[in-house]
Length: 261
Image (cartoon, rainbow, N blue to C red; front, side, top):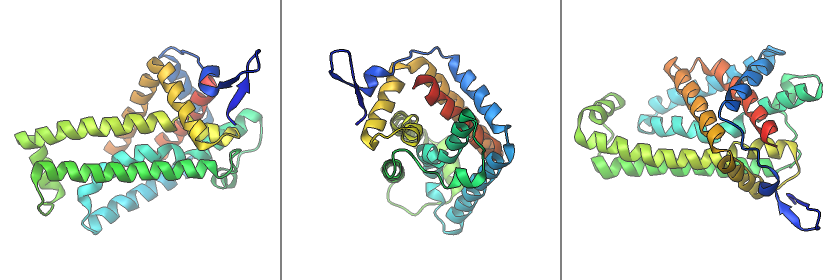
């Protein structure tokens, strides 16, 4: 599964079939297409975005309520890891619009992927990756500040920004987080849309996603920068921006998959 045959009847892996080498400016075309899908029958997309905002706000409130605010930053970073799975309903809407079918909120929530349970298996792997990153972030904190009670979110921010130890932790944490983010981006950005659209297994989809990202680095770096910038802008608005930004990125991600498929 996940291969076709060449003229010589030799199976070709998907990564050899799907090379586009798109220019970096194509990322803005995907964003424009996502914007169009967002405002075509906008209610389901905006309700979807509001649900993401509400759940995210509840999680942040819960972390502070349970005095787990020390994992807030890793949790926000982890959101980027599982984001492609959470956006599967938005891919479904863009897919329906592309086929000229009716769009409904129920259809976006109760998605039937062509790959069946493989998409949820991939989601479980992404959640595991997020948990590994959160644990790694706690270990990095302990290496720099020792095994002592978390002093509070406000004091930690001051320590990070005004002390040499804090600067060192920011540097190491940024590098480590960047590695996790790059890996999760590579394995998931095309894998989830592919699993929705095609009958492939999880590992074929993730491997193909990595290859597509690698073979289209200019446009994927541009796309990654756009995603990061819009997510950071949403966080700067107290997460309210997610109501529009998350659906926009979800629809645009579908178009990135279709452009390279």
